Amino acid sequence: MKYIRFIAPDKNKYYGIIDGDRALALKKPPFNEIESAGKSFLLNEIELLSPVEFSKAICIGLNYKDHAEEFGLPIPSSPVVFLKPSTSALGHKGKIIYPNMSKRLDYEAELAVVIKTRCHRVSETEALDYVLGYTIANDVTARDLQPKDGQWTIAKSFDTFMPLGPYISDEVSPDDLYITSRVNGETKQESRTSNLIFKVPFLISYLSSVMTLLPGDIISTGTPGGISGMTIGSKVEIEIEGLGILENTIAEEIR
Image (cartoon, rainbow, N blue to C red; front, top):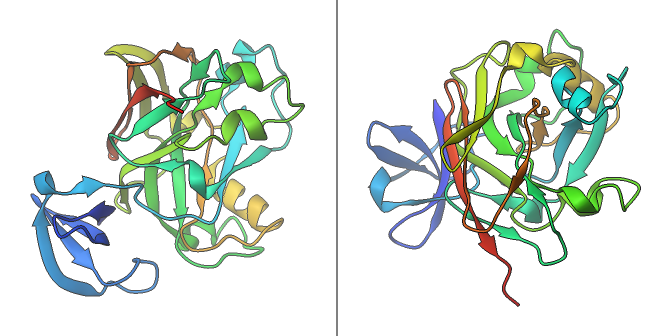
């Protein structure tokens, strides 16, 4: 199934399921059971939101060899982990705000894992049983602020810096998906998720040994090499095999 979250023409927000050219509204988030709200809407008349409301987005840095190499950094021996706040969430076709305090804003194409069930200290063999599905993430980064802070929270945590979508799918395997990014139609990144240094089952097991993962939480698995800056007005597209295209534009911060 393909899960979405959206604003309907009646101005209410719903979780839903894509069925052909329609969105079938659900009574509640699809973590435990699927319960219809008895309403459906044409896809072209709804506004897509971030497909899930998360308590935390756990992101993995330097999880592709070529990305570590482009920064001149060693291949990590254990996952490099940081968090993004729930206020950074943004949906498909939403506007990424370019902060006035930054001079370089980067895209990062990533496969994101969506947790279905409360998850604590699970093994690698059972890890995928706790997954609702997968979606596309753009780990937007104010690159020039990253080295100033000593760690990555400020550079990664502005509002709108975690675009997700357009939907969550339980119909793909995370093992070997094609991933690419484009800025204004020009291809910037190309790789496959088979190139991840730390694979999805390991990440779920490792992270759940540290913190409890809750329904809706995101694990963003890292970006391949090829990052560069964006400017106001740029259109960034991230495409992952079986997960569609996440599209956003860059907008000026207005105070």
